[in-house]
Length: 97
Image (cartoon, rainbow, N blue to C red):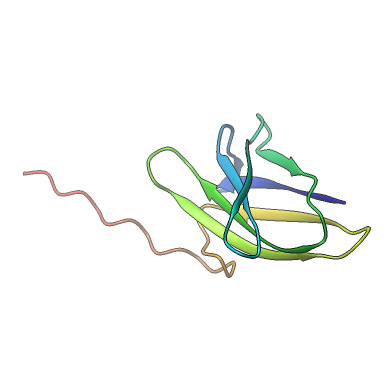
């Protein structure tokens, strides 16, 4: 089984994003960094998982996935979206004074 995908921001791949795999009980299981194409790969067992993505500077998103025996899932995540695939609110504009 494979859980793989691509992380993007504004339609462009994000290299070096941290992608965590969180188990059904909320336990941290694994972490990888995305390659130059924004891709990541895990080999989890069947079950429900949370995929959490963090970028330097604080941008993040997450997605819940469920794998069954023999299944592979391709997860496309944008740091411009929330965990439901909806546009994330824009960060507040910084004030200079």
